[in-house]
Image (tube, rainbow, N blue to C red; front, side, top):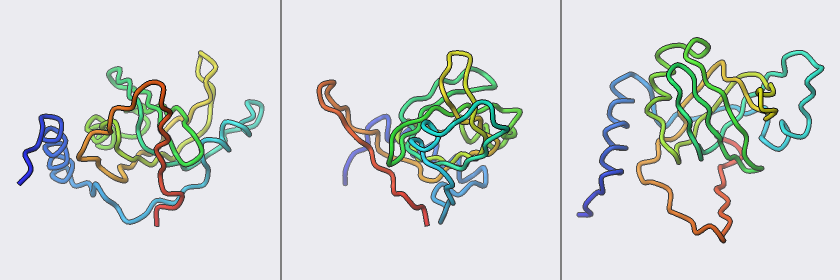
Length: 154
């Protein structure tokens, strides 16, 4: 039997905690309405709230207390998401705190520009679509890695 490293043990512990919280870490489906490329190329600040549902693999996370930023990568590219405890609720935010790099999440929310001018999705709902037990492989800087996420989650 294969021995697990520290990261894999931590991720399995998080998986157990997610299940104990009553969340399914591998739901059957998630309906997407947009992708990162479409959002980044068509967003218009002058139009009212543009609601989207996107999904992708978490490639960065910046947690800051009751709010966080993350980048997710889908089959067309990457986009930033803004996740705030007051907007998605305490249970969903506690779930987000257990998300790791490599996990796949679904976000429902609206598109906006941050103070730094980055087009992002402000989450109103967040769902864990797949908990990654193994960490992503480390890729050398000179090699560009594209992490593909299935276009349809059902």
